[in-house]
Amino acid sequence: MEMSRSPSQDENMGRLFVVSIGPGDLDNMTPLAKRAVDESDVVIGNEFYLDQIRPLLDRKKVVTSRMGKEVDRAREAVMLARSTKVAMVSGGDAGVYGMASIVLEVAQNEAPELDVSIIPGVTAATAAASILGSPLSSDFLVISLSDLLTPWEVIEKRLGLGFQMGIPMVMYNPRSRNRPGNLHKALEIGLRHARPDVPVGIVRNAYREEESFTVTDLGSLHEDDGMVDMHSIVIIGGESTKLLKEGENVKGIITPRGYHRKYIY
Amino acid sequence: MEMSRSPSQDENMGRLFVVSIGPGDLDNMTPLAKRAVDESDVVIGNEFYLDQIRPLLDRKKVVTSRMGKEVDRAREAVMLARSTKVAMVSGGDAGVYGMASIVLEVAQNEAPELDVSIIPGVTAATAAASILGSPLSSDFLVISLSDLLTPWEVIEKRLGLGFQMGIPMVMYNPRSRNRPGNLHKALEIGLRHARPDVPVGIVRNAYREEESFTVTDLGSLHEDDGMVDMHSIVIIGGESTKLLKEGENVKGIITPRGYHRKYIY
Image (cartoon, rainbow over all chains, first blue to last red; front, side, top):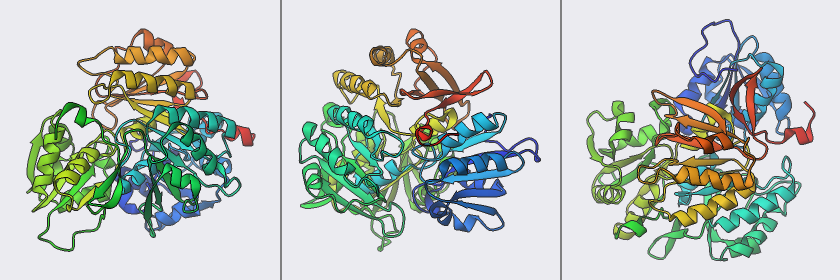
């Protein structure tokens, strides 16, 4: 399994790109990612992400997969890539809660000689952060509240330790269909360690149509988290996170990097 | 301070873009980031990052700043942006150990009405991860070992809690000129909580000339960390992180997302 990103030497050999398409529109997809799709004969992904790159799919064989069928999708991509060039597309960065790991696992087991390249992209955490201001400027934690692949007890343990660190925390999958109460329980753990007025930012549909964001605080979100949906990223501030204001108006949130310790400004 | 990303209504008004240029070359800079530079009259950054986007700088006023002068650079950008369009460029994602927070802080204090937009990019963590395989597939921690802006005691506390979480950890600034022993101390803390054979990946110059990576383990790196330099990102695996192999050859590292708990494959 070769991690090279340059074109294959042998045009007849198969190849598999796992392509990060970024957070929402072609404006946030890198040239390297676009080229990997352009060079591929087959593009595989779920409908939501294929729609995001629809202008690139003319004259491609497109294989649509359903959410929840990631293992099947990875297997199909690996099988097809034995004899053709395949792009498996994944939202945000494919290496963060995306398709990169399952594709590499399947390839390792079923086609270890296959040339697989992971193409990085703008991940949802930093895309959401850019809309809020700069909440992740220094150390931070990325955690998913979905207990589909990770037992809830493990997530709870991580949340407890994470909140003790006092650093910002990015929550992926804050709301899942089957366990709508996970966010409330996570915030409960947060309140054991953090002040209720710690700023919290919620970004919905970052860089997509109907993008919006809300700034609130830990205590208020614990009382009512109705504005958080499946397409939201929630960023809980750390000990030093502040509101970003213009006069009295809250414009976002920011975690200063600590220049005030070194400089006066 | 408006977070909008669309062009200003009034062509005569100033504007400030904080532009994430990605990990190493123009291939990893998003179209949105490129457009922000194209639309700007003045481009500010340190030499290293300006070199990375040199082809975009024809006919621009270029202001070069030195490493360690971030506050001055932010002030100058805010001052210039009162009357012209300014792009402050920052490597990787500007919101992660980059220029976004200090620019927003300075703007809030000195020019609260200024239109500041943060343009996201591919951050060094996921760029490095893509070269190693997929070490950050699930929850992970991002931490800097530089004690320039964060007291070392705080970093140590975070490392202790972080290693107890059992999730992968991305270390930025693993080697600084003034405190070369920080990495060794960090790994010492790691060995209190994690197995010595936890896989570790080191990526140097991701997506730049002379890119290279090394796969080792926590115990070995603790014994000899000579291969880690200022341009390295170190990714320490979590409890479930494994080597990615082709036969006996180590090709990278991977953190399975946990599909094996749900599926047999």
